[in-house]
Image: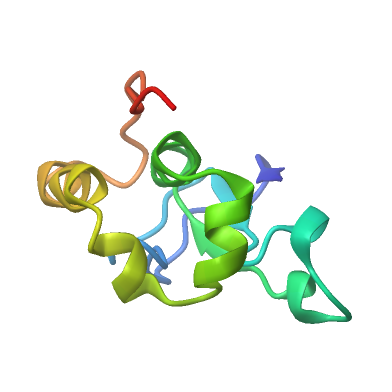
Length: 102
C-alpha cells in the first residue's frame, strides 16, 4: 500500500534504516494471505524500493514463516547486498528491482 500524499518523514525504513521520504509503503511482515488471527495486521513503514526488494527475494510463504524477523530476511545474501547498496541513496531514490528467479 502506498501513501503518496504523506510529507517526508523522519522515521526510518523498517528494512534499510534510511529516513523515509515522501512516498511510504506499508509492508506486512506476515502477509495478510498467510496470516492467522491478527498476526497479518502488523505493518511496517518501508521505502517503495525496499518493499519491492523484499518481495523480489521471498515468496509470501517464506515471509509467513519468517514473520517480523528482519534478521532472517537480511540473512539472504541478495537482500543483504541490496541493503548495503541502497544505504547511501537519498530517501526517495528508486530504481528497477531485480529479483531472484524462483
